[in-house]
Image (tube, rainbow, N blue to C red):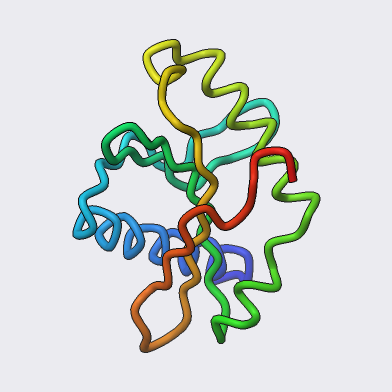
Length: 120
């Protein structure tokens, strides 16, 4: 198996774990791996009036996972979220929030609700 395929598989498994974690916290998973012209959103989840754009980062440690979310990537996710809201009027009235989920081996995922602001 190529390194790229192995990394994709780890990422997919981390996203699956995060979806289950979010469900346990009362979120409804609307879509996974949403492709937009601006890039991909890992998880689109809703709980009450909150629409969470969730970026999953799987690394050997939580610290490395947290450091891997760059300002450029946050900006790209903001543009992708605006595209989603424009294309899905049923979601436009919800409160948008950007979350990160940090995944490292042998530890539960860490959910950072409101990890950054939309204009960051």
